[in-house]
Length: 544
Image 1 (spheres, rainbow, N blue to C red):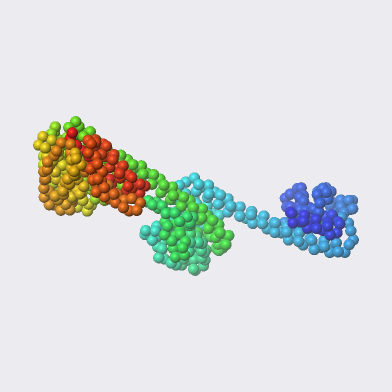
Image 2 (image 1 turned 120 degrees about the vertical axis):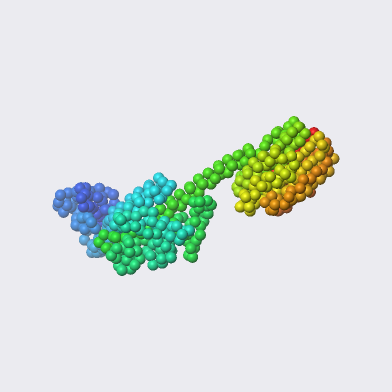
Protein backbone atom coordinates (compact mmCIF):
# COMPACT_ATOMS: atom_id res chain seq x y z
CA UNK A 1 0.00 0.00 0.00
CA UNK A 2 1.46 3.39 -0.94
CA UNK A 3 0.17 4.99 2.29
CA UNK A 4 2.11 2.48 4.49
CA UNK A 5 5.23 2.91 2.38
CA UNK A 6 5.00 6.68 2.84
CA UNK A 7 4.61 6.28 6.62
CA UNK A 8 7.65 3.99 6.91
CA UNK A 9 9.73 6.29 4.70
CA UNK A 10 8.85 9.18 7.03
CA UNK A 11 9.79 6.97 10.02
CA UNK A 12 13.22 6.34 8.43
CA UNK A 13 13.76 10.03 7.83
CA UNK A 14 12.81 10.91 11.41
CA UNK A 15 14.71 8.10 13.22
CA UNK A 16 17.30 6.82 10.78
CA UNK A 17 15.89 3.29 11.29
CA UNK A 18 14.67 1.09 8.43
CA UNK A 19 11.29 -0.64 8.77
CA UNK A 20 9.12 -2.99 6.73
CA UNK A 21 5.73 -4.65 7.21
CA UNK A 22 4.89 -7.99 5.62
CA UNK A 23 1.47 -9.65 5.79
CA UNK A 24 0.04 -13.06 5.07
CA UNK A 25 -3.58 -12.96 4.03
CA UNK A 26 -5.95 -15.78 4.82
CA UNK A 27 -5.46 -18.68 2.43
CA UNK A 28 -2.21 -17.26 1.01
CA UNK A 29 1.02 -19.29 1.09
CA UNK A 30 3.48 -16.55 0.19
CA UNK A 31 3.57 -13.35 2.28
CA UNK A 32 3.14 -9.99 0.55
CA UNK A 33 4.82 -6.69 1.27
CA UNK A 34 2.50 -4.15 2.85
CA UNK A 35 5.12 -1.38 2.87
CA UNK A 36 8.83 -0.66 3.47
CA UNK A 37 11.00 2.35 4.15
CA UNK A 38 13.22 1.35 1.22
CA UNK A 39 13.38 -1.32 -1.45
CA UNK A 40 16.68 -2.56 -0.08
CA UNK A 41 15.23 -3.21 3.36
CA UNK A 42 12.20 -4.90 1.75
CA UNK A 43 14.54 -7.32 -0.03
CA UNK A 44 16.50 -7.89 3.18
CA UNK A 45 13.41 -8.88 5.18
CA UNK A 46 11.59 -10.96 2.53
CA UNK A 47 13.22 -14.21 3.75
CA UNK A 48 12.19 -13.48 7.33
CA UNK A 49 8.55 -13.00 6.37
CA UNK A 50 8.56 -16.54 4.92
CA UNK A 51 10.56 -18.11 7.78
CA UNK A 52 9.04 -20.80 9.99
CA UNK A 53 10.16 -18.96 13.15
CA UNK A 54 10.10 -15.28 12.31
CA UNK A 55 11.32 -14.08 15.71
CA UNK A 56 14.40 -16.35 15.66
CA UNK A 57 15.22 -15.26 12.10
CA UNK A 58 14.98 -11.57 13.11
CA UNK A 59 17.37 -12.01 16.05
CA UNK A 60 19.84 -13.71 13.72
CA UNK A 61 19.74 -10.60 11.54
CA UNK A 62 19.99 -8.19 14.45
CA UNK A 63 16.47 -6.89 13.77
CA UNK A 64 13.41 -6.40 15.92
CA UNK A 65 10.27 -8.33 14.80
CA UNK A 66 6.78 -7.57 16.10
CA UNK A 67 3.54 -9.42 15.31
CA UNK A 68 0.99 -7.10 13.74
CA UNK A 69 -2.70 -7.84 13.12
CA UNK A 70 -3.75 -5.96 9.98
CA UNK A 71 -7.46 -6.25 9.21
CA UNK A 72 -8.17 -9.71 7.80
CA UNK A 73 -4.49 -10.70 7.74
CA UNK A 74 -1.56 -11.40 10.08
CA UNK A 75 1.78 -9.64 9.54
CA UNK A 76 5.22 -8.83 10.92
CA UNK A 77 6.90 -5.51 11.45
CA UNK A 78 10.68 -5.62 11.00
CA UNK A 79 12.67 -2.67 12.41
CA UNK A 80 16.36 -1.95 12.76
CA UNK A 81 17.43 -1.82 16.43
CA UNK A 82 17.61 1.40 18.40
CA UNK A 83 16.79 2.80 21.84
CA UNK A 84 15.57 6.35 21.25
CA UNK A 85 12.40 6.94 23.26
CA UNK A 86 10.99 9.30 20.61
CA UNK A 87 11.45 6.67 17.93
CA UNK A 88 9.61 4.06 20.00
CA UNK A 89 6.73 6.45 20.63
CA UNK A 90 6.56 7.25 16.92
CA UNK A 91 6.52 3.56 16.13
CA UNK A 92 3.69 3.07 18.62
CA UNK A 93 1.62 5.72 16.86
CA UNK A 94 2.40 4.30 13.44
CA UNK A 95 0.93 0.85 14.05
CA UNK A 96 -2.70 2.00 14.70
CA UNK A 97 -2.58 4.01 11.48
CA UNK A 98 -1.44 0.91 9.58
CA UNK A 99 -4.27 -1.13 11.11
CA UNK A 100 -6.84 1.53 10.09
CA UNK A 101 -5.54 1.63 6.50
CA UNK A 102 -5.68 -2.14 6.15
CA UNK A 103 -9.18 -2.30 7.63
CA UNK A 104 -10.37 0.28 5.08
CA UNK A 105 -8.71 -1.69 2.31
CA UNK A 106 -10.25 -4.97 3.45
CA UNK A 107 -13.64 -3.33 3.85
CA UNK A 108 -13.53 -2.05 0.27
CA UNK A 109 -12.53 -5.52 -0.90
CA UNK A 110 -15.43 -7.12 0.95
CA UNK A 111 -17.87 -4.55 -0.47
CA UNK A 112 -16.61 -5.21 -3.98
CA UNK A 113 -17.08 -8.93 -3.43
CA UNK A 114 -20.58 -8.35 -2.10
CA UNK A 115 -21.43 -6.20 -5.11
CA UNK A 116 -20.01 -8.63 -7.63
CA UNK A 117 -23.45 -10.09 -8.36
CA UNK A 118 -24.86 -6.60 -8.88
CA UNK A 119 -22.04 -5.63 -11.24
CA UNK A 120 -22.50 -8.91 -13.08
CA UNK A 121 -26.26 -8.22 -13.30
CA UNK A 122 -25.72 -4.80 -14.86
CA UNK A 123 -23.32 -6.29 -17.38
CA UNK A 124 -25.69 -9.16 -18.22
CA UNK A 125 -28.62 -6.79 -18.67
CA UNK A 126 -26.51 -4.54 -20.88
CA UNK A 127 -25.65 -7.53 -23.07
CA UNK A 128 -29.30 -8.63 -23.15
CA UNK A 129 -30.62 -5.19 -24.11
CA UNK A 130 -27.86 -4.66 -26.65
CA UNK A 131 -29.03 -7.67 -28.64
CA UNK A 132 -32.66 -6.62 -29.14
CA UNK A 133 -34.73 -3.72 -30.42
CA UNK A 134 -37.77 -4.79 -28.41
CA UNK A 135 -37.52 -4.62 -24.61
CA UNK A 136 -40.91 -6.32 -24.42
CA UNK A 137 -39.37 -9.49 -25.88
CA UNK A 138 -36.88 -9.79 -22.99
CA UNK A 139 -39.00 -8.29 -20.20
CA UNK A 140 -39.44 -11.65 -18.43
CA UNK A 141 -35.69 -12.29 -18.36
CA UNK A 142 -34.93 -8.76 -17.15
CA UNK A 143 -37.42 -9.13 -14.32
CA UNK A 144 -36.06 -12.49 -13.16
CA UNK A 145 -32.44 -11.28 -13.24
CA UNK A 146 -33.17 -8.20 -11.11
CA UNK A 147 -35.52 -9.94 -8.67
CA UNK A 148 -33.04 -12.77 -8.08
CA UNK A 149 -30.20 -10.37 -7.34
CA UNK A 150 -32.12 -8.38 -4.70
CA UNK A 151 -33.84 -11.46 -3.26
CA UNK A 152 -37.41 -10.68 -4.37
CA UNK A 153 -39.82 -13.58 -4.90
CA UNK A 154 -42.50 -11.62 -6.76
CA UNK A 155 -42.14 -8.87 -9.34
CA UNK A 156 -43.94 -7.13 -12.20
CA UNK A 157 -42.82 -5.03 -15.19
CA UNK A 158 -45.36 -2.27 -15.93
CA UNK A 159 -45.31 -0.27 -19.16
CA UNK A 160 -46.85 3.18 -19.50
CA UNK A 161 -50.04 3.31 -21.55
CA UNK A 162 -50.37 7.07 -21.76
CA UNK A 163 -53.55 7.33 -23.91
CA UNK A 164 -55.50 5.18 -21.43
CA UNK A 165 -53.79 6.54 -18.30
CA UNK A 166 -52.62 3.10 -17.19
CA UNK A 167 -49.54 1.17 -16.16
CA UNK A 168 -49.97 -2.11 -18.03
CA UNK A 169 -48.13 -5.33 -17.00
CA UNK A 170 -46.00 -6.88 -19.74
CA UNK A 171 -44.10 -9.38 -17.55
CA UNK A 172 -44.47 -10.84 -14.06
CA UNK A 173 -42.69 -13.29 -11.78
CA UNK A 174 -43.86 -15.46 -8.88
CA UNK A 175 -47.56 -14.72 -9.24
CA UNK A 176 -48.54 -18.20 -10.48
CA UNK A 177 -52.27 -18.10 -11.25
CA UNK A 178 -52.75 -14.54 -9.98
CA UNK A 179 -53.53 -11.93 -12.65
CA UNK A 180 -51.90 -8.57 -12.07
CA UNK A 181 -54.40 -6.00 -13.33
CA UNK A 182 -53.38 -2.71 -15.03
CA UNK A 183 -52.87 0.12 -12.55
CA UNK A 184 -54.65 3.43 -13.11
CA UNK A 185 -52.41 6.47 -12.83
CA UNK A 186 -55.14 8.00 -10.67
CA UNK A 187 -54.42 5.48 -7.87
CA UNK A 188 -52.07 7.77 -5.97
CA UNK A 189 -51.72 5.31 -3.08
CA UNK A 190 -50.26 2.56 -5.29
CA UNK A 191 -46.49 2.21 -4.95
CA UNK A 192 -46.05 1.95 -8.76
CA UNK A 193 -47.95 5.20 -9.34
CA UNK A 194 -45.90 6.96 -6.67
CA UNK A 195 -42.67 5.83 -8.35
CA UNK A 196 -44.07 6.88 -11.74
CA UNK A 197 -45.03 10.35 -10.57
CA UNK A 198 -41.75 10.94 -8.73
CA UNK A 199 -39.68 9.50 -11.57
CA UNK A 200 -37.48 7.65 -9.04
CA UNK A 201 -37.54 4.73 -6.57
CA UNK A 202 -39.62 4.26 -3.42
CA UNK A 203 -39.97 1.50 -0.83
CA UNK A 204 -42.69 0.36 1.55
CA UNK A 205 -43.08 -2.33 4.20
CA UNK A 206 -45.48 -3.56 6.88
CA UNK A 207 -49.17 -2.71 6.70
CA UNK A 208 -48.39 0.25 4.44
CA UNK A 209 -46.96 -2.16 1.86
CA UNK A 210 -50.20 -4.16 1.80
CA UNK A 211 -52.10 -0.96 1.11
CA UNK A 212 -49.55 0.13 -1.53
CA UNK A 213 -49.68 -3.15 -3.52
CA UNK A 214 -51.65 -6.05 -1.98
CA UNK A 215 -50.72 -8.45 -4.80
CA UNK A 216 -46.94 -8.21 -4.51
CA UNK A 217 -46.69 -7.40 -0.80
CA UNK A 218 -48.85 -10.26 0.44
CA UNK A 219 -48.75 -10.15 4.24
CA UNK A 220 -46.78 -6.97 4.54
CA UNK A 221 -43.61 -8.07 2.77
CA UNK A 222 -41.40 -5.13 1.72
CA UNK A 223 -41.91 -3.46 -1.65
CA UNK A 224 -39.50 -1.68 -3.98
CA UNK A 225 -40.80 0.29 -7.01
CA UNK A 226 -38.57 2.14 -9.45
CA UNK A 227 -39.54 4.28 -12.45
CA UNK A 228 -38.07 3.41 -15.86
CA UNK A 229 -36.85 6.70 -17.25
CA UNK A 230 -35.38 7.53 -20.63
CA UNK A 231 -32.52 9.89 -21.50
CA UNK A 232 -33.64 13.53 -21.43
CA UNK A 233 -32.73 14.45 -25.03
CA UNK A 234 -35.62 16.79 -25.80
CA UNK A 235 -35.89 15.19 -29.25
CA UNK A 236 -39.41 14.58 -30.54
CA UNK A 237 -40.00 11.84 -33.08
CA UNK A 238 -43.11 11.77 -35.22
CA UNK A 239 -44.92 8.60 -36.19
CA UNK A 240 -46.69 5.66 -34.54
CA UNK A 241 -43.72 4.91 -32.30
CA UNK A 242 -43.18 8.52 -31.26
CA UNK A 243 -40.98 9.12 -28.24
CA UNK A 244 -43.06 11.02 -25.62
CA UNK A 245 -41.92 14.59 -25.05
CA UNK A 246 -44.66 15.79 -22.66
CA UNK A 247 -43.21 16.58 -19.26
CA UNK A 248 -44.53 16.41 -15.75
CA UNK A 249 -44.90 19.17 -13.21
CA UNK A 250 -41.27 18.84 -12.12
CA UNK A 251 -40.00 19.26 -15.68
CA UNK A 252 -38.86 15.64 -15.92
CA UNK A 253 -39.77 13.43 -18.86
CA UNK A 254 -42.60 11.09 -17.86
CA UNK A 255 -41.37 7.51 -17.22
CA UNK A 256 -41.76 4.73 -19.78
CA UNK A 257 -42.78 2.25 -17.10
CA UNK A 258 -42.23 0.96 -13.55
CA UNK A 259 -40.54 -2.11 -12.01
CA UNK A 260 -42.15 -3.34 -8.77
CA UNK A 261 -40.51 -6.02 -6.59
CA UNK A 262 -41.84 -7.68 -3.44
CA UNK A 263 -42.01 -10.84 -1.32
CA UNK A 264 -38.43 -10.61 -0.12
CA UNK A 265 -37.29 -13.73 1.70
CA UNK A 266 -37.05 -13.22 5.48
CA UNK A 267 -39.03 -9.99 5.32
CA UNK A 268 -35.89 -7.82 5.37
CA UNK A 269 -36.53 -4.34 3.96
CA UNK A 270 -34.87 -3.28 0.73
CA UNK A 271 -31.64 -1.41 1.39
CA UNK A 272 -30.27 1.78 -0.10
CA UNK A 273 -27.96 -0.41 -2.17
CA UNK A 274 -30.95 -2.32 -3.55
CA UNK A 275 -32.55 0.97 -4.52
CA UNK A 276 -29.39 2.13 -6.29
CA UNK A 277 -29.15 -1.15 -8.16
CA UNK A 278 -32.82 -1.00 -9.23
CA UNK A 279 -32.36 2.60 -10.41
CA UNK A 280 -29.28 1.60 -12.41
CA UNK A 281 -31.17 -1.28 -14.04
CA UNK A 282 -34.19 0.90 -14.79
CA UNK A 283 -31.93 3.48 -16.43
CA UNK A 284 -30.48 0.78 -18.68
CA UNK A 285 -33.96 -0.41 -19.59
CA UNK A 286 -35.19 3.14 -20.18
CA UNK A 287 -32.25 3.85 -22.47
CA UNK A 288 -32.94 0.65 -24.41
CA UNK A 289 -36.66 1.51 -24.73
CA UNK A 290 -35.74 5.01 -25.87
CA UNK A 291 -33.29 3.65 -28.46
CA UNK A 292 -35.88 1.12 -29.63
CA UNK A 293 -38.36 3.96 -30.13
CA UNK A 294 -35.80 5.86 -32.20
CA UNK A 295 -35.10 2.77 -34.32
CA UNK A 296 -38.78 2.09 -34.85
CA UNK A 297 -39.48 5.71 -35.73
CA UNK A 298 -36.58 5.73 -38.20
CA UNK A 299 -37.81 2.50 -39.81
CA UNK A 300 -41.33 3.91 -39.97
CA UNK A 301 -40.10 7.10 -41.64
CA UNK A 302 -38.03 5.15 -44.14
CA UNK A 303 -40.96 2.88 -44.92
CA UNK A 304 -43.27 5.87 -45.29
CA UNK A 305 -40.76 7.58 -47.58
CA UNK A 306 -40.55 4.47 -49.77
CA UNK A 307 -44.32 4.17 -49.90
CA UNK A 308 -44.76 7.85 -50.77
CA UNK A 309 -42.11 7.60 -53.46
CA UNK A 310 -43.90 4.58 -54.91
CA UNK A 311 -47.22 6.46 -54.74
CA UNK A 312 -45.61 9.38 -56.58
CA UNK A 313 -44.32 7.10 -59.32
CA UNK A 314 -47.68 5.36 -59.66
CA UNK A 315 -49.55 8.67 -59.75
CA UNK A 316 -47.35 10.04 -62.51
CA UNK A 317 -47.87 6.85 -64.48
CA UNK A 318 -51.63 7.47 -64.37
CA UNK A 319 -51.19 10.70 -66.29
CA UNK A 320 -51.17 10.42 -70.10
CA UNK A 321 -48.10 10.91 -72.24
CA UNK A 322 -48.45 14.21 -74.15
CA UNK A 323 -47.61 12.36 -77.36
CA UNK A 324 -51.07 10.71 -77.33
CA UNK A 325 -52.52 13.70 -79.25
CA UNK A 326 -49.97 13.53 -82.08
CA UNK A 327 -49.76 13.99 -85.02
CA UNK A 328 -52.71 16.36 -85.19
CA UNK A 329 -51.73 18.33 -82.06
CA UNK A 330 -48.66 19.04 -79.97
CA UNK A 331 -48.77 19.01 -76.19
CA UNK A 332 -46.53 19.42 -73.17
CA UNK A 333 -47.56 18.95 -69.55
CA UNK A 334 -45.91 18.75 -66.13
CA UNK A 335 -47.17 18.09 -62.60
CA UNK A 336 -45.04 18.99 -59.55
CA UNK A 337 -46.76 17.97 -56.30
CA UNK A 338 -46.12 20.00 -53.15
CA UNK A 339 -45.70 16.69 -51.30
CA UNK A 340 -44.85 13.23 -52.60
CA UNK A 341 -48.31 12.98 -54.10
CA UNK A 342 -50.88 15.63 -54.94
CA UNK A 343 -54.32 16.46 -56.29
CA UNK A 344 -53.49 18.07 -59.65
CA UNK A 345 -54.07 16.12 -62.84
CA UNK A 346 -54.60 16.52 -66.58
CA UNK A 347 -56.01 14.47 -69.43
CA UNK A 348 -55.25 14.60 -73.17
CA UNK A 349 -57.46 12.81 -75.64
CA UNK A 350 -57.23 12.30 -79.43
CA UNK A 351 -60.98 12.18 -80.03
CA UNK A 352 -60.62 11.97 -83.82
CA UNK A 353 -58.49 13.54 -86.57
CA UNK A 354 -60.20 16.91 -86.19
CA UNK A 355 -60.82 17.09 -82.44
CA UNK A 356 -58.40 17.13 -79.49
CA UNK A 357 -59.62 17.03 -75.90
CA UNK A 358 -57.71 18.79 -73.10
CA UNK A 359 -58.76 18.59 -69.42
CA UNK A 360 -57.22 19.93 -66.23
CA UNK A 361 -58.33 19.29 -62.66
CA UNK A 362 -57.29 20.50 -59.22
CA UNK A 363 -58.55 18.67 -56.14
CA UNK A 364 -58.87 20.92 -53.09
CA UNK A 365 -55.95 20.61 -50.70
CA UNK A 366 -52.91 18.47 -51.42
CA UNK A 367 -51.26 15.36 -50.12
CA UNK A 368 -52.40 11.77 -49.80
CA UNK A 369 -56.16 12.31 -49.52
CA UNK A 370 -56.19 14.64 -52.51
CA UNK A 371 -54.19 12.07 -54.46
CA UNK A 372 -56.86 9.41 -53.86
CA UNK A 373 -59.63 11.69 -55.13
CA UNK A 374 -57.40 12.69 -58.04
CA UNK A 375 -57.02 9.04 -59.09
CA UNK A 376 -60.79 8.53 -59.02
CA UNK A 377 -61.41 11.76 -60.96
CA UNK A 378 -58.82 10.93 -63.62
CA UNK A 379 -60.30 7.48 -64.11
CA UNK A 380 -63.84 8.84 -64.41
CA UNK A 381 -62.75 11.62 -66.78
CA UNK A 382 -60.91 9.15 -69.00
CA UNK A 383 -64.16 7.28 -69.52
CA UNK A 384 -66.57 10.18 -69.92
CA UNK A 385 -64.58 12.41 -72.28
CA UNK A 386 -64.53 9.60 -74.80
CA UNK A 387 -68.25 8.89 -74.43
CA UNK A 388 -69.60 12.47 -74.54
CA UNK A 389 -69.31 14.85 -77.50
CA UNK A 390 -70.30 17.87 -75.41
CA UNK A 391 -67.69 19.02 -72.77
CA UNK A 392 -70.46 20.07 -70.37
CA UNK A 393 -72.04 16.62 -70.53
CA UNK A 394 -68.64 15.03 -69.84
CA UNK A 395 -68.07 17.18 -66.72
CA UNK A 396 -71.56 16.48 -65.39
CA UNK A 397 -70.97 12.75 -65.86
CA UNK A 398 -67.67 13.01 -63.95
CA UNK A 399 -69.48 14.85 -61.17
CA UNK A 400 -72.12 12.14 -60.87
CA UNK A 401 -69.39 9.49 -60.65
CA UNK A 402 -67.59 11.32 -57.83
CA UNK A 403 -70.53 12.85 -55.93
CA UNK A 404 -70.47 10.38 -53.00
CA UNK A 405 -66.69 10.58 -52.51
CA UNK A 406 -66.70 14.38 -52.65
CA UNK A 407 -69.52 14.62 -50.12
CA UNK A 408 -67.94 12.15 -47.67
CA UNK A 409 -64.52 13.83 -47.82
CA UNK A 410 -65.91 17.39 -48.04
CA UNK A 411 -63.56 18.04 -50.94
CA UNK A 412 -64.08 19.65 -54.34
CA UNK A 413 -62.46 19.70 -57.77
CA UNK A 414 -62.00 22.65 -60.08
CA UNK A 415 -62.07 21.24 -63.60
CA UNK A 416 -61.96 22.65 -67.13
CA UNK A 417 -62.45 20.53 -70.23
CA UNK A 418 -61.93 21.96 -73.71
CA UNK A 419 -62.19 20.40 -77.17
CA UNK A 420 -60.24 21.93 -80.05
CA UNK A 421 -62.16 21.38 -83.29
CA UNK A 422 -59.75 22.24 -86.10
CA UNK A 423 -62.22 21.61 -88.95
CA UNK A 424 -64.91 23.84 -87.43
CA UNK A 425 -62.30 26.40 -86.25
CA UNK A 426 -63.78 26.60 -82.82
CA UNK A 427 -63.04 25.74 -79.21
CA UNK A 428 -65.83 24.18 -77.18
CA UNK A 429 -65.31 24.13 -73.39
CA UNK A 430 -66.95 23.76 -70.00
CA UNK A 431 -65.30 25.25 -66.93
CA UNK A 432 -66.32 24.19 -63.41
CA UNK A 433 -64.53 26.69 -61.18
CA UNK A 434 -61.04 26.52 -62.69
CA UNK A 435 -59.66 30.09 -62.71
CA UNK A 436 -56.51 29.87 -64.84
CA UNK A 437 -57.40 28.59 -68.30
CA UNK A 438 -56.42 30.64 -71.38
CA UNK A 439 -56.26 30.74 -75.13
CA UNK A 440 -53.16 32.64 -76.28
CA UNK A 441 -53.10 33.70 -79.93
CA UNK A 442 -50.02 33.90 -82.16
CA UNK A 443 -49.71 37.66 -81.53
CA UNK A 444 -49.60 37.22 -77.75
CA UNK A 445 -53.19 38.16 -76.95
CA UNK A 446 -54.92 36.03 -74.37
CA UNK A 447 -58.52 35.16 -73.55
CA UNK A 448 -59.67 33.54 -70.34
CA UNK A 449 -61.94 30.51 -70.49
CA UNK A 450 -64.40 31.81 -67.93
CA UNK A 451 -65.87 29.50 -65.32
CA UNK A 452 -69.56 28.85 -65.90
CA UNK A 453 -70.16 26.74 -62.76
CA UNK A 454 -68.61 26.28 -59.29
CA UNK A 455 -66.12 23.46 -58.66
CA UNK A 456 -67.47 19.93 -58.68
CA UNK A 457 -68.66 18.98 -55.22
CA UNK A 458 -70.00 22.41 -54.29
CA UNK A 459 -73.48 21.98 -55.72
CA UNK A 460 -75.43 20.26 -58.46
CA UNK A 461 -75.78 23.27 -60.78
CA UNK A 462 -75.98 22.62 -64.50
CA UNK A 463 -72.66 23.10 -66.27
CA UNK A 464 -73.06 25.10 -69.46
CA UNK A 465 -70.97 24.69 -72.59
CA UNK A 466 -69.22 27.66 -74.19
CA UNK A 467 -67.94 28.11 -77.75
CA UNK A 468 -65.26 30.48 -79.06
CA UNK A 469 -63.26 30.85 -82.27
CA UNK A 470 -60.05 28.85 -82.61
CA UNK A 471 -57.47 30.51 -84.87
CA UNK A 472 -54.45 28.77 -86.39
CA UNK A 473 -51.33 29.33 -84.25
CA UNK A 474 -53.32 29.62 -81.03
CA UNK A 475 -52.30 27.83 -77.87
CA UNK A 476 -54.36 26.41 -75.05
CA UNK A 477 -52.65 27.02 -71.69
CA UNK A 478 -54.07 25.53 -68.47
CA UNK A 479 -52.44 26.35 -65.09
CA UNK A 480 -53.37 25.36 -61.55
CA UNK A 481 -53.44 27.89 -58.73
CA UNK A 482 -50.35 26.36 -57.10
CA UNK A 483 -48.28 28.07 -59.81
CA UNK A 484 -50.02 31.43 -59.53
CA UNK A 485 -49.92 31.45 -55.71
CA UNK A 486 -46.32 30.18 -55.39
CA UNK A 487 -44.49 32.23 -52.72
CA UNK A 488 -40.90 33.41 -52.48
CA UNK A 489 -38.86 33.77 -49.28
CA UNK A 490 -40.62 37.10 -48.54
CA UNK A 491 -44.07 35.52 -49.03
CA UNK A 492 -44.69 37.34 -52.34
CA UNK A 493 -46.95 35.53 -54.85
CA UNK A 494 -45.82 34.83 -58.39
CA UNK A 495 -49.25 36.14 -59.64
CA UNK A 496 -51.20 35.50 -62.81
CA UNK A 497 -50.17 38.76 -64.60
CA UNK A 498 -46.49 37.75 -64.33
CA UNK A 499 -47.27 34.43 -66.00
CA UNK A 500 -49.31 36.09 -68.75
CA UNK A 501 -46.46 38.52 -69.42
CA UNK A 502 -44.21 35.54 -70.08
CA UNK A 503 -46.78 34.00 -72.42
CA UNK A 504 -47.17 37.29 -74.34
CA UNK A 505 -43.45 37.38 -75.10
CA UNK A 506 -43.45 33.93 -76.68
CA UNK A 507 -44.92 34.82 -80.09
CA UNK A 508 -42.36 33.23 -82.43
CA UNK A 509 -43.88 29.81 -82.84
CA UNK A 510 -42.23 28.23 -79.78
CA UNK A 511 -43.17 24.62 -79.16
CA UNK A 512 -45.36 23.63 -76.20
CA UNK A 513 -42.24 22.11 -74.58
CA UNK A 514 -40.38 25.44 -74.83
CA UNK A 515 -43.33 27.31 -73.31
CA UNK A 516 -43.62 24.75 -70.50
CA UNK A 517 -39.91 25.03 -69.70
CA UNK A 518 -40.11 28.85 -69.66
CA UNK A 519 -43.03 28.84 -67.21
CA UNK A 520 -41.36 26.41 -64.81
CA UNK A 521 -38.08 28.33 -64.99
CA UNK A 522 -40.04 31.43 -64.03
CA UNK A 523 -41.62 29.50 -61.14
CA UNK A 524 -38.27 28.15 -59.94
CA UNK A 525 -36.58 31.56 -60.11
CA UNK A 526 -39.39 33.09 -58.06
CA UNK A 527 -39.62 30.55 -55.22
CA UNK A 528 -35.91 29.71 -54.96
CA UNK A 529 -35.52 27.28 -52.07
CA UNK A 530 -38.89 28.10 -50.54
CA UNK A 531 -41.03 24.92 -50.34
CA UNK A 532 -44.11 24.79 -52.52
CA UNK A 533 -47.38 25.23 -50.67
CA UNK A 534 -49.56 23.64 -53.34
CA UNK A 535 -49.29 21.35 -56.33
CA UNK A 536 -48.16 23.01 -59.56
CA UNK A 537 -49.39 21.93 -63.00
CA UNK A 538 -49.11 23.45 -66.46
CA UNK A 539 -50.58 22.05 -69.71
CA UNK A 540 -49.83 23.60 -73.13
CA UNK A 541 -51.49 22.38 -76.36
CA UNK A 542 -51.55 23.71 -79.93
CA UNK A 543 -52.59 22.47 -83.38
CA UNK A 544 -50.03 23.72 -85.94
